[in-house]
Length: 321
Image 1 (cartoon, one colour):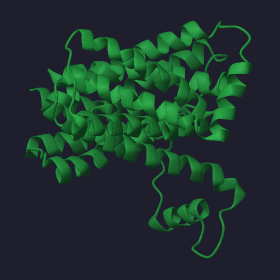
Image 2 (cartoon, rainbow, N blue to C red):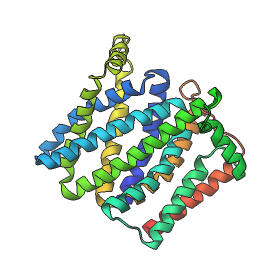
Image 3 (tube, one colour):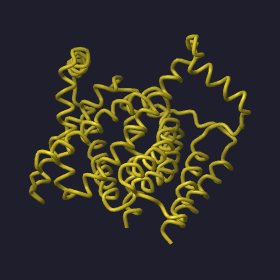
Image 4 (cartoon, rainbow, N blue to C red):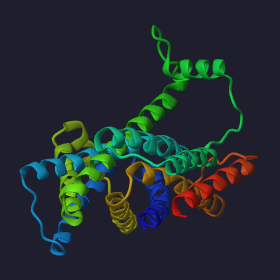
């Protein structure tokens, strides 16, 4: 059951990520500003307490708020990476690292383990996702990899060439967001194992809202937010933004629900299905509406993507059957 819920969540998220990329590229050019407007809507989740009223004790409240603030910090790095490159490049980088970090964190802190069959499916799903997402089919020798990394990250005694600084920032932001995503998922799994789902979800969202308020205490960030708000003459993008946030909220609730029922690392390894949805959506939009979204998709790698898709199907079959 939780596998189906997670896959549906990733299907919705694929569309949300494309919309986020459009808004970051065309409308809002600051990841802090975008994270602020995304996080501020978290306060409205409090209405869910009508369904299941619940108040945490001080210890539970502290953990819930910390989880919410961690998620907001994750969004900042995630939007930075998404703003710097194509969605079809950033999502797979982060998506390949999140299940690996989640597996390590859940094993260390939650003592969660996978059976041999689940572990094999976990590896196959990650490999399939990577094959779908990478643009180039050329396999580099170790020496070439070393030289490339040296150009991107610089020697220990030298600086990074200006040409590779954007790539360095992209990799750093992607890795940090993946690390934070994994930490959040493992923390929220612990929360759901000790608290009722709806109550824990709502109070963790209040943590994100608290993080939004803390953003306003940083003068530079506050100035960016106020400057953007003053520059808005019409609310024509508000409806689109709210629609995207509603879909994101639905997907987020579904993913949290799946995490509350299943293994964190296993659920995150299902992100390979998200790559398939994302690539299909981006191909459609880039072909039919290039003014809305235009991304470099590469060429001559359809066989590679078909192999990746086949691996994801095999991995899902191993989990479900």
